[in-house]
Image (cartoon, rainbow, N blue to C red; front, side):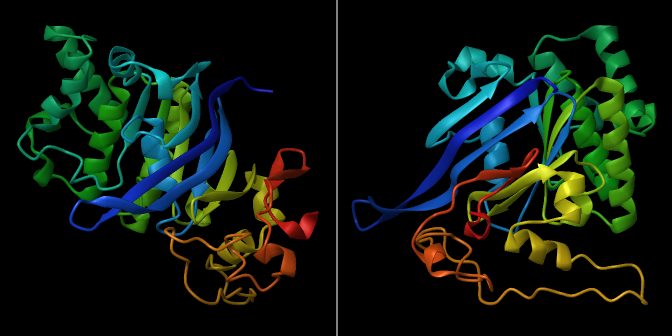
Length: 322
């Protein structure tokens, strides 16, 4: 078995809701609620689910952009939720993030060269001619030309801007990169180019990815294992081949049925989920998915299911398999 690079244990993130004249905390938005998973060195773990299920919040906690309410994030044997500010700055070099919006994540007043060079200057990685050489190498790594370094973000297409974001993440030689929906704002043809680029870079630099996305069809092409989130909780986790061929959780089955089949002669049975996603402020008692599940039992409404291993490396949180 591969060596574990990152362990997430019982991770929670509750955002307080303030009301009244004195701003008293009256409730919480349970964005991430008791999530646990591992990421092995050199692999890509895909994390999927509907908007608002807590995927991006989880990713931002891993890179220390958000402080967890509780739980552990163990990176290379060190719990990074308990480190001081000095160690946190050092950790920035080891864990990087690629943001969803390639335009909003780049400073419009800085040239592409300066954007890529900045993290290397801050972390004292390179300077002078060595810095210039490294910027040129990174631009070429992501499929851009060296003369692009003097241009500004608005002069590039969405796909090119995302390549700049990737180059900036690579600048500090990270071990783990959180890809926060890096292709959702791009055209389909450009999505394929960026996904192929990420795959090539992973092989070249021995990178580890947490790949966050809306659709299982995107994650399928890049992930070794896939985790499915619903309303702040992880409901299924398994190897990509097992999960796609034999999904266990009713929510995963519904997500897979929504993927279009590029064959007009082949009919696929679509699973339509009824109702809306419940509020993360007041999630349902028992299984959080029972309000939309066609296989709901009486126990689902009262008891929250535990994550259990059904097959080798295939985990699911559902009362159907007890």
